[in-house]
Amino acid sequence: MPRIVITHGVVDVDNWLKGKAERAGAIAGMGGTNVVDHVAHDGSNMVAVSADVDDVANVTATLASPPAEMAAVMEAHGVVPPFTAFVER
Image (cartoon, rainbow, N blue to C red; front, side):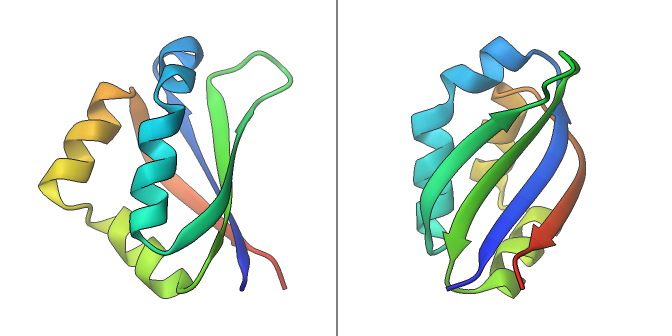
C-alpha cells in the first residue's frame, strides 16, 4: 500500500488541528489508514497529511474535485489549496 503525503496551506493551524478526527475519517473513506498530521516547523501555515492509501489516483482525483460534503469540511478546517501530493516509491 503506497504512502501519500499531501501538503497545502491553512488559514489557522490550531483550527485545522482540531479537525484531526474528521480529517482521518474522510481519508479512511477514500481507503486511507495510518493518517498523520504534520505542521511546518517554521511556524508558517503550511501543513501536510500523510496516509497509507489503496488507490493514489482516487485520492488525487478527489482532491482535484472534492464532493460537496468534503469541500464543506475542508472550508470549515480552513484548508487553502492548491494541494501537492507526494507518493512514496
